[in-house]
Amino acid sequence: MKTARIAIRLVAATILAGGFLLSCATGGAPGTAEAAPFPLAAAGASFGAQGLSAFAKENLASFATFTLSNGLPVIVKRNSSNSVEHISLVFRGGSAASRPESAGIEALSLKTMARGSAKYSYEDIQALLDETSSAIGSASSLDYSSYSLTTLDKYFERLFPVWVDNLVEPAFKEADFDQALSQAKLALQTKEQDPWAKTGLETNRILFAGHPYASSPDGTEGTLAAAKLEDVKAWYASRVRADALFVVAVGDFDPAALRGRLESGLGRLPSSGAAGPGSVSPLSRSGPGSIVKVEFPQSKGMGYLRGDFAAPAPRESDYMPLSLGLKLLSDLLFDVVRDKHGAVYSPGAYIRGFNANYGSITLFKTKIPGKAKAYIDEAMALLHSGKAVAIDPEASTDGYAPVAEVLESAKAQYINGLYESQATNAAIAGRIAGSVINTGDYRSYLLDVDRIRAVTAGQVLAAIDKYVLKGSIAWVALGSSEVLDPVQAGDFQGFTAAP
Image 1 (cartoon, rainbow, N blue to C red):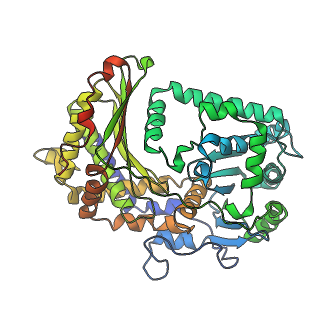
Image 2 (image 1 turned 180 degrees about the vertical axis):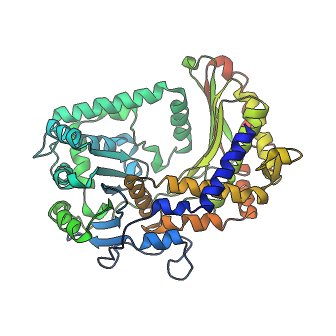
Image 3 (image 1 turned 135 degrees about the vertical axis):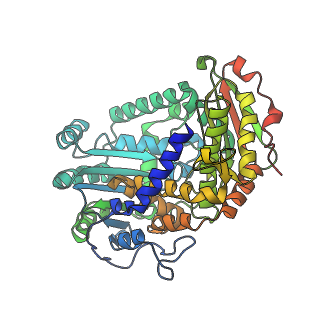
């Protein structure tokens, strides 16, 4: 196992050295259509005062921005390296903008809208999508939602009017709503019956208590049972306003031509003149860690363990150090908990990318969640002492090396992951939308590589100490009763490595 991880590290470093940057190359610069409609002050850096990487410089030249007559901002990123065109209408606020009693209504509304409009029935839309191998879809998260079209450039003119009509004049038929609601209930039921998904639901319920994130994008059994078509119509009337929306388009677009199409389409959406949804406050937990045991007889002797903790948002200076620190911890968990003690099928540690952010330590499939906590502590103690899994464990006396020696390899893997996350136009659009939501600057994701490269070993260890060792972690252990009985609350109040 150690040899395999060594190979992965070396391949990652080799790919970077060979210029993997070029996989994200874009077409010729379209220029900026007008003054950008977003504040241009990326978190922690400047686009003019500092030297930029080749990746950032090349991609900056591919952007154009403009604003429709109703105030709707549009970001266009020219990419002529493929024939796919992607466009998304992004709704600020996400489920955090909903009340807990209406959780899931945003996702349900978007799914209903996709099923028909004034001009196009569900059958017409599906026939056209099948014929062109295209996709119209939606996604809902805690901070924002999106409604997107992905198609080949030769079909864009045929599909674009359908996408627009779904947004501007949705049919909102009772039958379409009923079908969307049925699918939402089935999806939630599937999560409730899956032990790992259920573990996540329970952890989020505890971590998000009293916070806007308590409004799950998927809804709850209670909110979906109470949902009515009138609720969907009310959501549309209050939220589909130019003030709370923006458009991201990635592909070989002519910005001027796209502007004309959008003006005659989305330019018809009303603007209330009011500010869009505001930012959410950070998650806050204090005191010792806690453990909640959730009985799940269907797990058949298998347990699942997850601990969540408040973490810095992507715009904050500690985000990249903690991201890299959790990458090193994940390797240590694999080495100690899985390889050394054989206590788990798959361990991990990672941070997310929300405005009120959080991270997780996870054990997927363990028969001994109680004993496994001591093994997590063992891995954490190694990291706290400044050690990580060595790039070549066999060349080390104990298989470990100082964090400073391993950090560059971890950075290389992390950077490769960032590039791989931009493999499609839809994925690039997601990075742009996330940048707007997290920093207000559509370009800020271009600085992530430079932010990673600037991280020091001292910053990594300080972030781990602040957010994990000294953090208040909400643990959930899920499994059948015989698996949960040995789990002791006192073991989860902190780490034995904590100072």
